[in-house]
Length: 272
Image 1: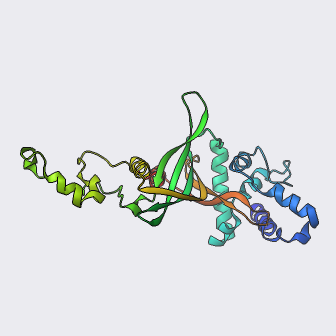
Image 2: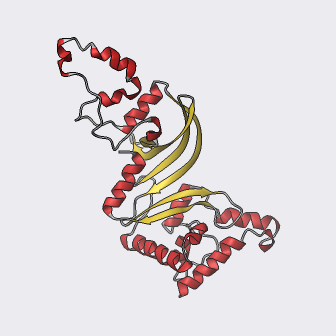
Image 3: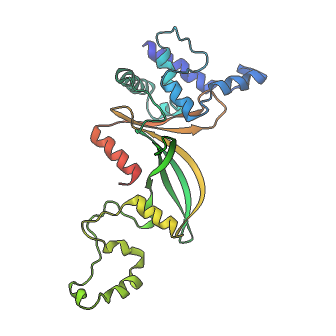
C-alpha cells in the first residue's frame, strides 16, 4: 500500500510538473533540466543508483525504488492499471537488486538500434542498424555494426531455409551455359541459387547492397537502446522530449521473458 501511495504521488509529479507556475521563471527550467535524463550514460547511472532523481531523500527506505520507477515513461501506466504497473515494476526492481544487475557501457548484453532511412530502387526504406560496443585489438572502446533488421522489405527472408533456384544436373557437360539465362532472368533473386547447406547472412547481405551502391543511405531517424541484462526481462529505452519531469532517456517498453523468448527477441533484433 505504501508503494502504491508513493506511485500516486509520482504520477502527480510527472503529470503536473509541466506547469511553469509550480517553479516560476528560471528556477522552473533549472529544475526540469536537472530532472531530465540527458544521456544513456545518465540513464545507466540512475538505474545503478549511482545518481538519483533530484529531490529524492537517500535516507528514505524506498529511495532506490522511487528512483527506479522514475526511469519509466509515465505513459506506460495508461496501458494498464496503476496497481498492475507498480507490481510489475517492483518485480523488475527486486530482480535487479537480487541479481545485483549493473548496467555498463562495456556490457555485451545491450545494443543500440538506429532506425535509418535508405533509398532502394528509388523507394524509401526504413531499416534498423544495430550496434554493439566492442574493444579493438589496440584495446580501445568502439561501436561496431552487429546486426540489421527490416531486410524483408528488400526481399531477404531469414526464415526461408528451403526455397531455392537450381541448375540442371547435366550442366557440367555443357560448360554451365544455363547460367547465362540465370543471370539475365533471376538477377534480383540470385541468392536462391546457393547451396542448401549455405545460410544467407543478413549482415553480409546488407553490406553487399551498400558497397555495390544498390542501397543508398538517406538519413538517421531515431535511436532505441535494447537491454538484455536482467535474467527474466528485456526492456527498451527511448528519448522523450517534453517539458515535464518525466523526460529524456526512459524505459519505453519492458517484457517478462523466458531464456528461449529472450533468445528469440535477440535474433529478431539482429535478424539471424
